[in-house]
Structure formats: C-alpha cells, structure tokens
Amino acid sequence: MEKAWWKEAVVYQIYPRSFMDSDGDGVGDLRGIIRRLDYIKELGVDVIWLSPCYKSPNDDNGYDISDYRDIMDEFGTMADFQELLQGIHERGMKLLMDLVVNHTSDEHPWFVESRKSRENPYRDYYIWRDGKDGKEPNNWTSYFSGPAWQWDEESGQYYLHLFTKKQPDLNWENPKVRQEVYDIMRFWLDMGCDGFRMDVANLYSKVPGLPDGKPGKGRIGAEYYQNGPRIHEFFREMNREVLSRYDIMTVGEMSDVPLEEALRYAGNDSHELNMVFQFEQDDLDTVDGERWAFRKAPLPELKAVFSKWQTAMDGKAWNSLYWTNHDQPRTVSRRGDDGRFRKESQKMLYTMLMTLQGTPYIYQGEEIGMTNAPFASIEDFRDVETRNCWQERVVKGGEDPEKLLEGIRHRARDNARTPMQWDDTENAGFTSGTPWIMVNPNYKEINVKESLEDPDSIFHYMQQLIRMRKSHAAAVYGDFREYQPEHEKLYIYERNYEGQKLYVVLNFSDTDTEFVLPEAWKGEETEPLLGNYPQEPLKNRRMRPYEAAVYIRKEK
Ligand code: ISL
Image 1 (tube, rainbow, N blue to C red):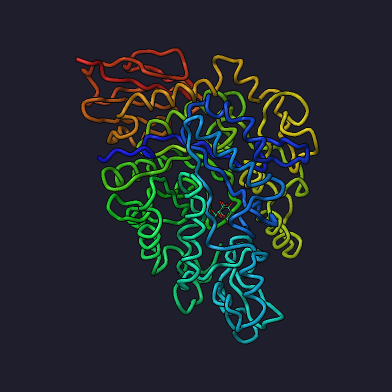
Image 2: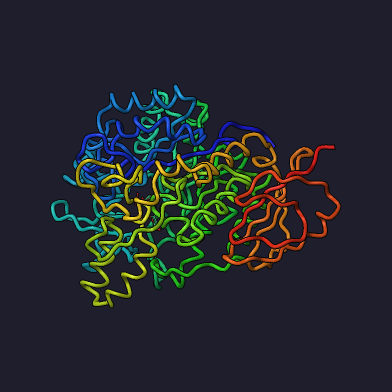
C-alpha cells in the first residue's frame, strides 16, 4: 500500500454561506472563516474543503458560477481569499477548492455569448439542440424538477441543464471547453491551492445523440450521462495536463457510481482521481425512486455497503468516508438519535468513520452534533431543489402538502445549511444581522462555546479520534475484516497493518446489547484505546446504548 499525505489527512468542509458572518449582512463570508481558523485547527484536521466561493448569482448557492476567477460579492474579495489561503497554510493546513464544471451559471460570459446566436463562437461551449415535434429534444428530467431542457426564444433552440435552468451544462465534447477548465484549475493551483473536490464529476460525458431515457419514477435519462462513454478519457487527459503536475488532492463527487467504475476513477494506477464520493449509503434511504422518502436503513444493510467498499477497494483504490455534507440531512438525526443519546450516538458514528480505510470528511457543525432543523412550513426553506419540487408537485401537481412536507423535513438539504452554532447569544453568534436562513433554535444548548467548555463534548471526543487516527497507521492503512455481519445492532470489525491490530465494536441501538467475542479474537491480548463510555476490557459483555469501543493488540 503506497502512503500519501491525502490518505492520512482528515478534511473539514465549510459551506461559507452558513459558517460565520463578519459584516452583519446575514451571509457567511471569507473574513468570518479567517476569524475561526484557530478553532478549525484545534479540532486537528489537515485540510479545509471550501464549497464554492466564486462569483455567482446564487440560484444554487454558488454551484452556479459566473466568474471562475473571482470571489462572490457577499463572501468578500480576492485579497480576503489570499489572506484566508495564507492563514490556512500558516497553520499547517491545506485548502481544497470546489470545482463546478459540469455546468456554469447562465450569467457566465460564455453562456451570454453562446445564447446570442447559432453562429456565435461560444455556441458549442454548451449543449444546444432543436426540439422534436414541437417538444424538448428528449425526455430527460432535471435533478431539480421538470425537463432538463430550456427553450431559448432568441436563438430558437433548447439548451441542456441537468440542474436548474440557470445552470446550463457545458459541452465537454468540445476540446476548447476542456482547455478552459484546465486553465481555471491551473489558476487556483498556481496560487497555492491544494486540490479540488469536483462537483458531479461523473456527469461530464453524455452519450452522443442524447437518446431518450427509460421512462419511470424518479429522474429520467441518467443512463445516458452518468459515467458516460468518454468520462475516463477526460479524467486521464485532465490528469496528464494538470493534476499530475502538482502535489495535490482530488475527490470526484459522483452520485450513482458503481463499484467497478469507482475502481477506475480512483484506482491506484488509473491516473484519474485520488478518490470519489460514492452515494450508496445515502441511496439506502430512498424508496422506489422517491427523493423525499426517509426510511431508516436497517443496520445490516448499512454495514453491507460500507464493508463492501472497504473490502473491494483495499490495495486497489482509495475510499472517501463521510456521513454528511451540504446536500444531506444531519448525521445524528439521520443515523443516530438526536434526542436522549445525541452525544453518544454522534460519537459512535464518528468512531466508525475514523476507524475505516479512506479519507474522512467532517462537515461543519458535525463536531458539535448539530441536528436537523424544525422547519415549520415551506416558506422556511431556501433551497432551489426543495422550492422547485414544491412548485411542481404541490402547486402544479396538487399533491398533499403535509405529506410532502414531512418527507422534505427529513431529507432537505437545508437541514445541513442552517447557520453554524457558535454560542448561545442571538442568532447563535453567526451574524449580527438577519440570517439568510433560520437558525436552529437548539443553539442555546448545542453550540461551539458549550462544546469547548465541556471536557466530555463531541468536539473533544472528535479531537481524540483524529489524534488516534494520526498515531495509528492501522486506522488509516489497515485492511478490514468484519465479524457477525448479520448482527442487527452491532458493527464489529478489525483493522490490520504491519503487525498493528485494532478491534472496533459499535452499538447502533439505544438499548444495552449483548456482545459475544468473535472466535478469531479469543485469546488475543488487547487493551482499550478509545471509547465514548468508561472503557471496559474486550470480552463478552453488554454494550451500552450507542457505545463505541476501540481496542489495540498489546505489543509483545
Ligand atoms: O443533493 C442531492 C439530493 O440528494 C443530489 O442529487 C445533488 O444534487 C447531487 O449530489 C449533486 O450535488 C452537487 O451538484 C449540484 C449542487 O446543487 C450540489 O450542492 C452539489 O453538491 C449542482 O451543482
């Protein structure tokens, strides 16, 4: 197994809009982040991934970019950015930028040109087609409701947008587009940035001819643009021209990436990317293509997903490990218990993340155990995905609003986007103005100040976890073996690396649960390494609610 800094790193994701507001306009900004760098450093992470901070009309909170070489007005200036980058480097951390190049904003100068006429030199930067029988060129639907095509009156054609109509898809078939993207990447890397998280990175290559997708529930057309025919060629080209020339880290965000494909994108010898975010764990909640279903996946199913990726990638490719991000509900509400056992369950869940093979990603607020928000009505939501869907299904489609709202409450991306809870003062110390989205009222109890004062807090446990990972190569590089996979409440596994052995036992339930020592562990001499309750020896015993216990084999 080849070692690398990005395999040993722990990443912290910042969603700038919701992290810290320094100027009272209710929107987080770069100077706010600068103010909190010591806090992030104290947690012990190595890399900060910044969600997009580029110029944007904010139809999708910065995932619609109108200038890739400048900073969003609400977030600050290029000088602020440079100060932030320097502050991160001075503290021995690195900065991962968000690269959003499947699409641009419709306000990007390329698109402004492109839509002017069919003859415009930028026409071919995007995907334009004639209609079919007076309708859209094909039946593809957008991730954010409705058809994936928008009619443009002036130039008399449709353009493709897999996300909102203000996010037209770039035409990656055009070599000029790819060179533009590589130039943008060089711009940030030459400034000293340390890598990229690549947005919807498996959607760049569409099947030529753009055939109709299989009709059904959920999104239509995905089989013709996910992991498309030229995608690996594009990444090898990007790698040759840009990535291989810098000592950086890359992670491609890829919903619907089968294991065989991930082995190619992130394979040791693939010369594509370092790792991918795969969504199999998230997809477990979805029922029958329904985006807003909120089934809590039974533990054996969740374990099967993680164990599969652990085993299949070992020695061949590298995993990324995450529970949530700016698109997902809060971890403790989704996979743990955000009531009575909030602290215990959040600690247990992150014990798992920090004891698997791969690079762990912590989303802002997870280190203090932030929860889903009690959104009262549709007016409380800001996310374009949610609002579009409401428009389509309730306003136009006449669906039962209460039922849909119930699903949205569980799954909405806004759950992760409520402001960071810094202290128990007004607006949780996030802003002196009016926050752009509601603050979770539980900030009085759940906040950074409280967490730093409490020696038993999730924050301090997370610190211990990160330190443990850094001082035990087996936690990073060790291979993975699971026991009792059919167990409905416990996740039991070991990690081995060059003679170092870790044993992990996790209780995913809120009740005392009988743990029976696996046959293979009998007779081993072990000692407790870490846990979220007072530690007990590794033996047949009761695991307490949401207990996590990590052991190490005694040195001979
Ligand atoms: O958030 C989702 C619903 O769970 C996903 O379908 C999401 O839209 C998909 O993972 C792509 O996400 C990324 O690209 C989007 C942007 O809205 C997301 O914030 C981003 O992470 C379009 O750029």
